[in-house]
Image (tube, rainbow, N blue to C red; front, side):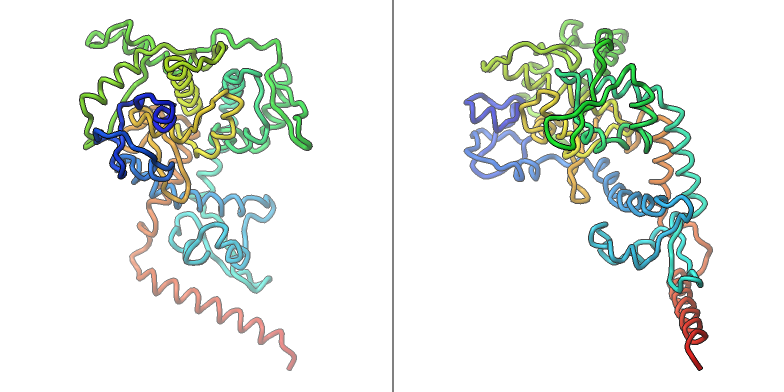
Length: 416
């Protein structure tokens, strides 16, 4: 339950975060309860984690690179795209300085060349970028059994055992699904998945076949609890660990005694797990807090099923109704800064599973993540590693040469 809901209901904020009339940082815990705070103010007041913010600075460019890469690979017979076409899409792709300027920032990924037959410049992927693409495709095909299990788990978190197919399309890359997952995953496993018509026209629902049981599925947080309880130096009481989540805070984030006490109280709170059937919703304070903790467990489990342990808030919100979450998911992430980290870089809200990362990298990487990380490394590399020449002069001379060739072609074609 978000802090705003708690205040509206007359409860104390769950995490001990109180607000004054004017906005203050939520970890400073002012003594006066705020009268009103908008969602945008709540997002702006969050504590920034420099490690995740630096990672998202690079991801901003990676998202644009992947968009152009997908356009290039869309035609398997001729894997290239004209600069004119990309220039027309500059605004949609958020290429602020134009397509050509953006492409030249990443020469390890894109190669610009002049097509004499079509009398215009084109762009294709470099050998290094093509190698990353092949590596990712191989990794995805090799992980098809894991992908099937991920979809089963997602459907099992829904009370109706079904979710809209369009919602799955939104997160197909995050889940490591192949391009043709409707055929290679859903149709190929007809004994597990079933497509049925939705209530709206031209909509389909992905359903878990009745014979498939959700019993025996254990959430990722339960594996962490087992490991923690088995440690010899475990300082947490075993009964307290039963409903706990791993908490971690960035350096410099000040935690008051009141905050720590609220977290400890919340950790002990019993809740219904993401794969368990919830009972009737209670409107009491304890019932709403348990409902909020169940929502935390669902989004925690969803993030643990993604390849990179991160997803855009808008995408995961597509599943909110089907998972029985009646809360604002974005506020849910902000209410639990020890479990999630919300970034607003790149004109999008992205949430990370904090415990899965260390120093900007996954603690337990997988083959698909490794391939995508290689592409991110090429993005970070930028123009570094090029031959020791003046890159600006090289760019201008290549442009001049392309214009000369184009003029010569026009001159040759003109009537004498």
